[in-house]
Length: 458
Ligand code: PMP
Image (cartoon, rainbow, N blue to C red; front, side):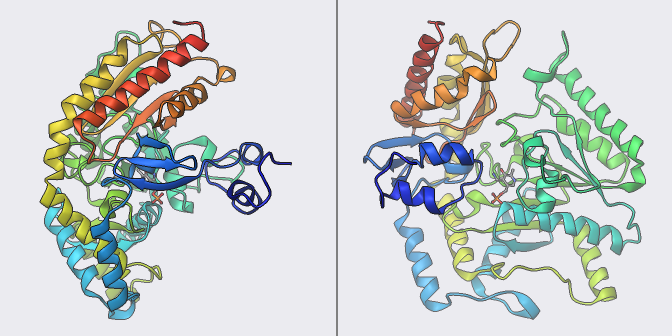
């Protein structure tokens, strides 16, 4: 029985919807927290209260939660051509314009673009392209894929197999065969006593090489990584990490796919996370901020090597047999294109760089808080470690539900946080101002203080 009035939106939600990433039985009791509307970096709950969205929804609402200009583009495009696809040589101008634009801003030379509707679809597509490519060049045995433990790459059957989180696999018989996971490069949590960051990165690269050798390098098709691990907890790569990892990949002729679904379009202080951390991938997947999250759209960028393989394979086997009904949707493509125009007009990447020091200082100052073990970030993404003991880095026992307490207290102070285990992952809308960052940090500090008091730590 629910405590909500019959026919209230809460009761109707409970009786009709299944929510992702939600404890289904608890939801029957607690009901939903309904978001009524959004404006700028705020969303408004059902009592009309404004909350700062510290995670931009799911790391995606780069321009905040409403846009007259994007609404107009969607409206006008829908009136002109409300739907078309890219099958069998069909095309539409918004998709052409968007593909061209993406190629022109890519962080490394890229040859072609495949449009999709979500990050999961982009990664699923890229998995198939790895197999398609190695088949094309006569090495079909190179089909195993390596990603990292704790990575999140999506919820499709292939992208969830790339995902390195056991809770996404339990009870489903996943990951699929041939999806392997190497070490989680989280220096704060996983370093050995006395190990420097550079030594830690070396150990991560050695672990990757050991896995490749154990499996047989001739069977490994590609390695997958985000520049900054988002769903892993906003974990920055340790010093020298990608340099060492990429050396291993080159040694064994393993393709590199960069998942820019979160990092792409300004999040790390450059247009691409690849630029911030020196990644030189063969393929890039991107989504989320591509359309400021206002339309479901994603893209896979492939380099000349992959493209030539695709051409050869299509010569041999006939049409490339892969595609989604909504891939190349003119409305989504037009909104994405306009989003990229807005980014240029408002100088979004420069803005992120300009506010980055305030973001890092304001949240970094909370390292002295009794509950905070560490904070690291870049651009407008960062992770804060919640610990019960700063010295040993020990975590609170799960039964205390410290993340849940901080979350509830933050909401009372008007702040929505995103937790990944015992880490708070920050990724506010990219248009956040300095004053708003300071306000976010103030609300967070108040929530941490309340929680510390509840736990007798303050
Ligand atoms: N890759 C990364 C890095 C992501 O963070 C996500 C979603 N959070 C995805 C892929 C999947 O994207 P989507 O939810 O749009 O399918």
